[in-house]
Image 1 (tube, rainbow, N blue to C red):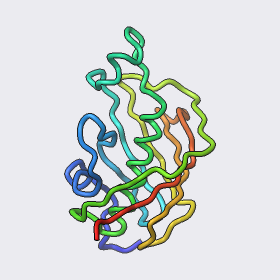
Image 2: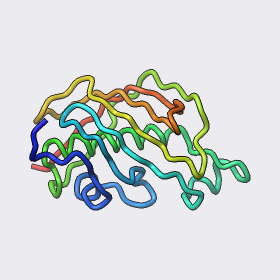
Image 3: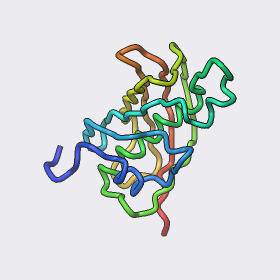
Image 4: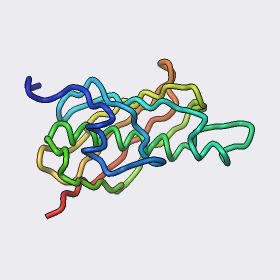
Length: 154
């Protein structure tokens, strides 16, 4: 790891790297960034998120697809920090999601830790494959592998 690369990303840096905004920005911070290898995203799950109005009334559960999206956002932020892509208008597109398993409900009040690591990808490359594990207090909530394309405007 080079000393000049940050190992964390706060909400300001996150918003300079990925285009997502409320209500679809699903990562509050990223820590333990090992450039082009791994990172841990943090998502504070709160009752005032819009999906809890309908999923499910009286029994709020974070939708599985938003957990996977949060892992993907954490992975994109890790690549963006590693490649110094702040303010470069990067877009990220899902290409595939494999081996998804859900093991625990995620509910308001939980702190979701999004552990992401690179399976395949290289600096300057467009297509990346990641392994992701979402945990709450050390308990596995979701795991998946996902492929994404990082696209920078010409």
